[in-house]
Image (cartoon, rainbow, N blue to C red; front, side):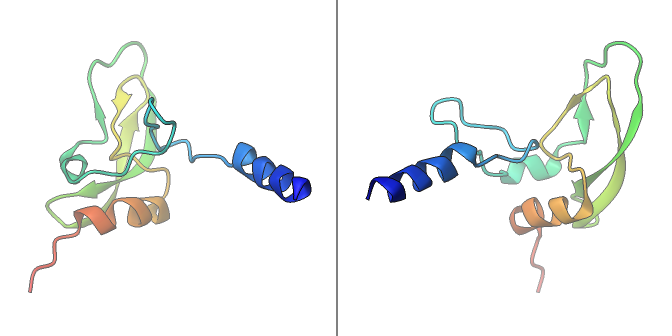
Length: 101
């Protein structure tokens, strides 16, 4: 029984949250992607210092899909800012996709 508890504890302690997820500061669990975040740009001011353009993916409200975009490293990234197309589809699409029949 102690071995099972030890193994379970090890799994819980070593579990990692993806870097793009923000944590709920009260309980330390990932916050879900919210519908209002579908409308956010990839980054927001203030943009301080030299900026480097980095290719990212974000949900586009006009095309109703994930699109490639550029994030300026000197600006503050929003949660609508993903490192890969797969990540954008996995996180944003279930929340943001409009089903038009």
